[in-house]
Length: 111
Image (cartoon, rainbow, N blue to C red; front, side, top):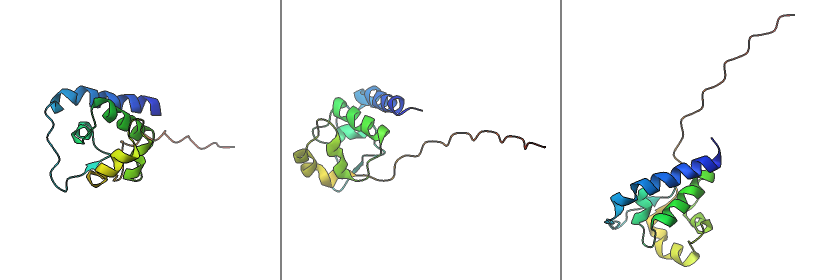
């Protein structure tokens, strides 16, 4: 699957679930949002609406976050926002996609 298609799919999932988060539930003390696994939960972060959540999901589809600080590479998210929210972010291992089926082995050639 191409990276653009994955990014579009991730953004679409966030968009479709956005109405469910119309009433944001604030993060509990010590609660973190995993940038590599969160979907619509991204919109629970202060200052993150549908557009920024889609941008985070699209960046993650191209390349998983290795550290929370990499979120500043997303357009619209600056260093000041990151510093205010760094305690609310984590970057765990990326969600694993199911492995693609291996091609059938070729029969051995006989001379």
